[in-house]
Image (cartoon, rainbow, N blue to C red; front, side):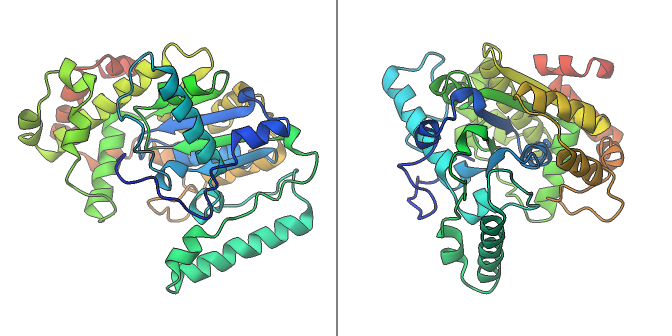
Length: 350
């Protein structure tokens, strides 16, 4: 999950990021870090933010720059040199402008771009997608995509970064940028496990979990989970324990942060406009017509929804796991979840 090197890409310029943006008027209070585990609603919520015409969005840049020079399980009170390294890494993440990080779909009109620049940028992104599809994957993935921010417009921008790869580094990254906003999405354990298993069945995820990385943290030790005991568990229980261990660490990191919010995936799905509006307001943003339109269209979709599709019928998706998982499977997952204080987020489950 956090494996791999910190490769240098043409679209990932180390000299830019928050530092250069600040010179244009953006401060930490205008940076939103959006976290969650995979399959917990982060992509949809990130696109809600991206639909705002004053947001500059970075989609999962820590999959482009892995940051293996940082510890997977940072200390609660990191040393100054580690904070400096984390800040430099965060700068690089926010400066990464590859097709994945800056060209995610759907695209939206931005107030900070001239119409011609927006048209040319969209053409570049489409051209890179065609190149990627027909054999030019390497080049398509390293060509930098310009932000095309017009002169004098940086002061109006809110930077949003979304990650599902750094749940154990939330505290470190937030402490490295005091004043930033942090949002964490938390999905019901049965919903998250069912979705992850579906991804494995479709060949989108590996069935083998990274045991050494997962079991090295303090949460595993606190629960008495060892490599031997974990390996011997059925796959469903291993996914459930992964949900427990990573979410526990993430929420422990978030707890002391003054500017952080935790939102349940189901609450977003049941009241998308109201709850998304609350999170936008938390970030100092309004809910303009473009955003309202996206929220409505993406949650009332009547067609077929792909695995990574943000357009789906939200109300029908909330409890999909109740039909995917047998009663026995649900009980097994909940037996693991009940071992954690995270179960308090679903008091109705008893």
